[in-house]
Length: 277
Length: 275
Image: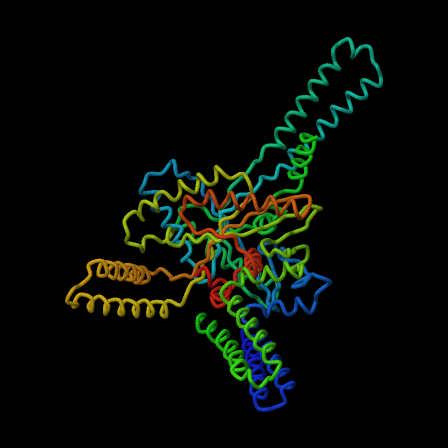
C-alpha cells in the first residue's frame, strides 16, 4: 500500500509539473489557462494521496451518497474460536485477547502499592515485541436470561390469574387464592422492573494482539500463540492468572451489540416507554 | 520520517501551484480565474494538512456523504462516530483522545509531584468508574520501536543537550533557570536510556477513550453518545488530560483498531497528531 501510494503520488506530481511547464511554454492563453488549472487540480490530487487514498475505492463503489469502503463483515470469529479474523486491503489479520483478572481496589493498597501498580501497567506494554492494545472496558452485564426467566414466571402467574377469573371457581375465591396470585404478580413485576431498570455493569481488563497470516486459520493461530506468550508475561508481572479468551466471549470485546446486550436494552426501553406514558 | 513525508507531499503540491501562479500574466484575461483557483487550492492543501479533522467532516457534511466501513457499520456525514445497525437497534461509537503518556510513564519525569500523580492514579480511575454508568473503554495501544535506532536517537539528543549545557555554563552570565531546565531534560533522556539498558522496549503509544450508546434511531444513539462523551470529558479531567473528540479519518482508523492492531509504520502515519 505505501508503495502504491508513493507511485501514484510520484505520477501525479510529475503530471502536474508537466502541465504547469507546458502551460508556460505555449502562448495560447486559453490553452495555457486550461493546462494551468489542470496542473493545480492534479497537484491537489497528488497531495490527497497522502491520507485519503484509501477512500478511492469507496468513491468507485459508492451508492447514492454512501461511499462504500467495505461491504463484508467487519470481523468474524475464527473457526477454531480462539481469535477474531479480519480481511483488510488483501491482508488477513488474526486478533487474540487476553483477559487480565484484577480484583484489587485502590482502597486496599498503600501509597507504595498504588505507585507500583501504575508502573506495572507501563511495564506490560513493553512485554511483547508485537503491538499490544491494553483496554479497560466497562460493559453491561448480560441479564437476558434472568430477565427472560422472570418474564416467563410473570406470564405464567398472570395466565393463572386470568384462568382463575374466567372459571369463577368459588373455592378459590373463598380461600383468597386470587389475592395471593395477584400479590405474586405484583412481586414478580416489581422484581422485573427493578432488575430491568437498574444498570448492572462490570469492568474487564484485557490485552489484544494481532498477527497477519496467509490463511484465516494461520492468522488466528499465530495471534493465539502470541496471546499465550503475552498472558504468561502479564501473569508474571502483575501476579494474576491472565488467560487467553476463546469462544463467543471474544465478541463482547469487539462488537457493541455484545457489549450492550439487546434483550437488556429492549427491556430497559420498554420500561422507559411504560414509565413515560 | 513522517515529517519528511509531510514536507514532501505539501511542498511539491505548493511548489506546483506557485509555479502556475508565478506565470499568471500568460493567462491573459483569464488570469484572475487561475489566480483564485490557485489560492483556494493552496489554502485547501494547507488546511487538509494541518486541520483535516475540520475540513474533511465539513466536506462530507456539505455533500451529505456517509461512509460505509463494513457491513452494518456506517460513519455518518458528521464523521464523529461509527454507527452499527444490529437487531433493529443503532449502536453509536465515538472516540476521545486521552493521552496519559506523561502520567503513566512519569517515572521518567523527574519533576516534583509526579510520583504523587502516579500513586493517585488508581484512585482517580476508580472514581471515574463509580461516576460512569454507561459502556466505555479506555484503550492504550503500544507498538515497540527499534531499540537500536531509538537508543541512538536518545544518545544524539543527550549529546546535543550536553553541548548546550556546557555552552550555557561557559557563558559570562549563565542563566540558572536554563541550566536547570537542560539538566532536567538530560535526566529524562538518561532515565529512558537506563530503562532501555534494563531490558525495557521503547514503545510508541496511542491512548484513546471509546464509548458506545444505543438507540432506536440513529439520531437517538448519536445524541446519547454526545452526552456520554461530554460526561467522560468531565470525569477524565481529574487526570489533567487533553481530551478532544476525534473526528474525521482518524475515526475510521480507530474503528479498525477494534479488530486488529497495525504496525509501527502505519500507526505513526495514521495518528501523528497524538505522537
